[in-house]
Length: 114
Image (cartoon, rainbow, N blue to C red; front, side, top):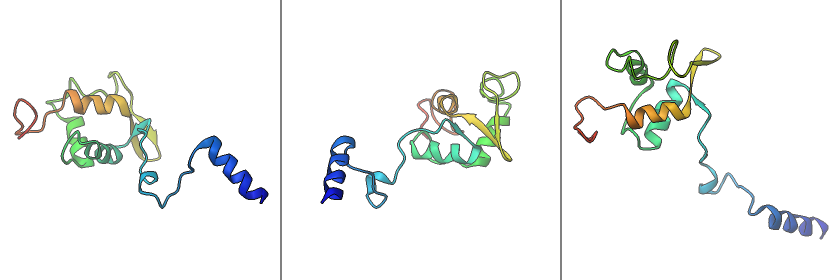
């Protein structure tokens, strides 16, 4: 009985506990503080900022002459790359801002749609 009472009191205090079997508890809703080229590509698609992109696509954009003045990461840029193992890290907010505000898909019209 004591265990049931403690469990009920705990649930009352903190709300319904997370359960990995519940659909709403499987997805992380917070943004990560930093992304790699791979995780950044996944995040852009998941958030619907771009319909599709790969890590290679992001690397191409990062080194493209077209975006040389506006890509926010690197030496002499507003945000440095971080490192984790062999991966480069980019702060999530400026990464997303670049793709929301600056990036335009090739072949896209004025509103960003093709």
